[in-house]
Image (tube, rainbow, N blue to C red; front, side):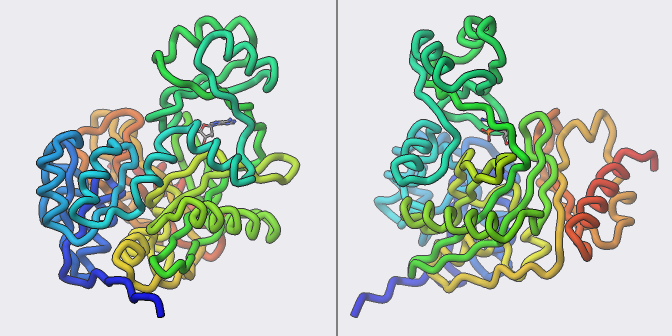
Length: 383
Ligand code: AMP
């Protein structure tokens, strides 16, 4: 008989690498279930630190601080996947790190991630590695225009990417991107963007919240709606792909797969995120078990909870530009009885910075989407 794995029970301390809003919502879910939360990141008074039991402020490369952090907890997880590999390795000497360092290593770099997906026969946007102007020209000859040039590492929310529409842009594009490994992707003329967030437990159990439909503005997620308006075939394919990615990467915890749905009805993977995802924030209010509680259950070796959606829902991000020198009209948004307000405790609103979100629950996804947009618009109304 196989050994039962050790469960990490309420009362234990959970370590979170990273200190943003994902860690904050994780900490809220964990504390509700009686766990303690320790966070480590280079900043202080952070969204996660404000609700954690212990906030350690140290660079990720400060391995003494990482050791102290890991010694004080029963398991380490993360809310920010760009922590250096050595940080996860050092933490792993003292506590299990879930998902493991290999998951981080693969998903931290677009080329590694895309190569991993292609090797496993999973559908991924056509791509080429670019290390020189010559590579770029050859890649453009193969993939054609338009195409998107992205940095292989540390890119998110459209940072470090340029759309190329004509050969004249090549020289200036190369000059404007940092000197590092790049990836050229075919530009996908998609019908819509969707995501599936999957959870995998230590016992190989799998859970997901179905397909979520996402719209972006300036490359940043703007509104997510669930359930997505895609047909059954697309939904079951997207879920199966997600399950396969979690299994092949051997994820214990959460992983989000972001897809393009092409105009011909095919799914192409754009990106993976091995943690709770912005498109899953609506699960906090709309589902029996949120993505954050599920991450906790998975990394603690507990049974996964039901992902049943209680009502259709929509989430709208609140970016720093909403502040524009004055406080948004919170009262106006709260006058929508089926809309929930989430703020992350960030002190300085900057354009493009995710400061909070609204979630609306309704009888249909369309109605939820309408409600959440109306509530967000109300934030700019004069009091
Ligand atoms: P990313 O940081 O790669 O997730 O890109 C952010 C957003 O830019 C995506 O959600 C898309 O809306 C858009 N985008 C990125 N890559 C492509 C592509 N190859 N084709 C079309 N749109 C893209």
